[in-house]
Image 1 (cartoon, rainbow, N blue to C red):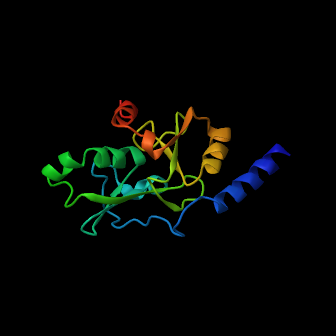
Image 2: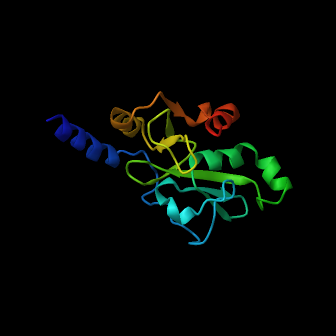
Length: 159
């Protein structure tokens, strides 16, 4: 009975993912690697994140952690010409529904049993309801809004 209720909640939760988009992040280049960890993007599609630059170009990442490193240190990446322009928007995929979500409006589960392509990871969700459903099955220490993702937290996850 518990599994049935959880399944119904999970199904209902995907409909209220809180996204303003009805799409997924599509891989732009099958041979592309993550600019931070140099991992092949096509092997980690469920973790794919995307930054849209002010010049309209898109940069894709293998995980939230990789994207946040670039987002939080844009000056470094711009100076070394690893970014062609400042970042305008960032997107993640809801871990349950797979839908594209504005990363600044998403919530993130910290401390779950699920690890990303490069170790400990923040798991993104379009709604707090989806994050809570995920935590019921996979654990987690906290649900964090975007504003609580600090440089120190990303550095800690990357140790």
